[in-house]
Length: 158
Image (cartoon, rainbow, N blue to C red; front, top):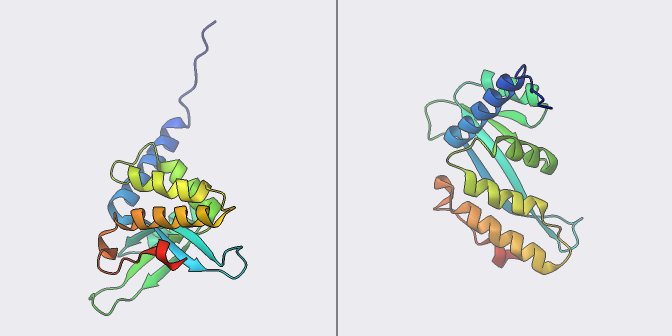
C-alpha cells in the first residue's frame, strides 16, 4: 500500500526554515563565551548565543514574536552613523531549538552549528568536560570575523 503525504503546510515551514538559515548565514553569528557562574560546580559555564543584526527592528521583532524566544535590543555604537538592532537568543533550550531548526538549510555556518550543538549537548560532569567545552568555544570564536582581534583563550581561564 502506498501512502501519499500531503504537501499542505510543508512548503511554508520549509521556506521559513531556509529563510531564517539565510538570515543567520548572512547577518547573524553563533558565539560561545565562558562566564563565571557561582551556581555551577566548577565556577564557570560556556554559554552559546545566536544573534542577528539588522538596521531596522521590525523583522527581528516579528521573528522574536513568531518563535517566542530571545529579545530584540537597540545597539548604539559610537563608531557607526546609525543604530542597529539585535535579535539575541541565549537560553540554552532555545539556542538548540533554533540551531536544529536551521541546520539542514544553512550554507555558511554548518561547522559553527556542529560545534555549538556539541557544546550545548555535552553534560559537564567533570572539570575536563568544562575544559573541552571551553576549547570548543575557542574553536567557534575563530569563525567570527569581529572577534579575531579580541579573541580570548577560554580554556586557560578555567
